[in-house]
Length: 304
Image 1 (spheres, rainbow, N blue to C red):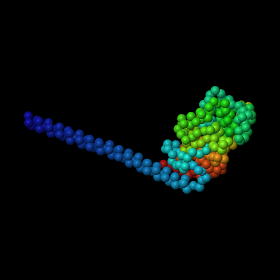
Image 2: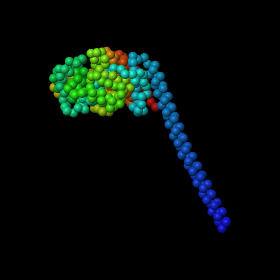
Image 3: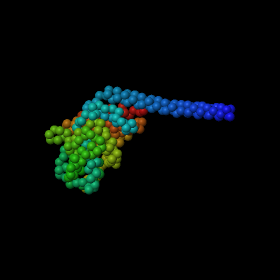
Image 4: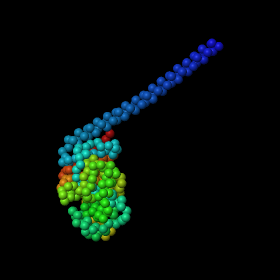
């Protein structure tokens, strides 16, 4: 009986030892697997940080006229460069991106007539008084040539349109962006018609591209032709004069007033199929294009 008890105890001890060995073996394996994964994540993060730091140094070394610059990497889902990009500045016609979206959300009409009031707005893009347009086509036209009369026609007679613009901005997370008018033109009291930051201008562009891809697709072209319901043909050029110099351009919007200076926002894919939103604010009328071209050149080779 004593012998049997000792034998049973020995077997139990051996079983426990065997189980312990298994636990140590496989536990160590899993712990090593976790360690490997942690090290891999750490190395990837270090490589990402190093690549962004190198890019930052290159952008900082550029001679640009812009007061503010912001670069957002869509694939990383984060900002990778900023210079004064949380400073609130006049946005000029960049506002039109949101103005056409809010106008299109009003489904009470699908045609728009160019009123005398809209026609007298600053700038001449070849529209005619009483010219009748398909609403979506006029939205595209207004973005492409940055038409003040076009966007006024889209927004006038809309109750509380400016309130809706400001509400929409807050709804999509643009906390520092606000609007006084739908065109972005400087007001009579020499203040801006709308304000934003370079960082939030990128957010607006990406939202616009997701919300109305068909409308904003036209902004990647150098030239196009619109025909109104009234039968008038409008052959026009993009206000973004470097649209043809940026491969895989997805979105562009210009802005320029005396107070704002030259503004430009684009979304594009680089040579490594990475998508970026880039904004320059407070440059000059011509400087916004040279500034952007320099930034795009540096981003073309960026990869992780």
